[in-house]
Image (tube, rainbow, N blue to C red):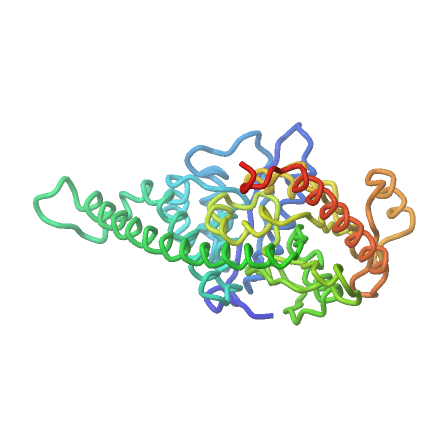
Length: 382
């Protein structure tokens, strides 16, 4: 697995807080996911902290006492918190622990930075990181003051902060301008495909649920398939294979995967890539049946809502990795999602049914489109 050398071999203390009374399962699941994120960066978790408190400490998140304990651990290089920290919490924790402090948002951004390969992907990750830095910069006055400033100003820390803010804003504007040009090019390609009679179905789902494997199985498209988080950050499109006639004009697209609590900065930065989902004709929800699929389903709907995807857009629900679970678990999922299709991308099980469903939904979309167009009055008649 490719890893960010900056974090390879670094010793992490992973920490979270859970409510004392309320249900804790979601927090625990999020923490397990967070630890997997750290491992994907090449980090080694040498200490875990699961603290019971109903709300974070406003100054230190995990409390000053716990922060002092971590400060005494020479074996720890980085304190990683499974939440989004406020600027003052990062500053306070750094000062008292004398260690690097990162939160969930930053860890996900760094993984995205590692995975990005295209110009667009790298620009989008840089944009997310700049917005992250901008959000945190206001709590760094004391740290910034140590860098020195310009005589005759309100204060060295304030001056350095303002200088950094101006630099970040300028770079953000430059990146957004370049991404807008890429967005226009993508729109031209999308309109060309539509004129040629192509329909597009977008694969959507959690990262590492097998979307790339499904894209390869359906289209033969040469895609990178790895057992790691966020392998795909760019949109990849392939034509549904194995059929003739109109069916050849069905495209399957795959783009960046989701995860619970996906930072808004990343959703915002990758909006141009995620637009492929917005403008697709139908969606294929891919759920990993071996994991918490109801949470996956909820997360997918939440992200789609954030990027303004039409809730009435046709969709197919697909459960992948049925080779990893019992028949009883499959039966339970069938009861909750009665129209779903159950497959194993690895074992090539269930793909004929999936292809048939894709063709059926394509036919329905075309019929509806023809019906709508037949009801329109030609411009020449007006």
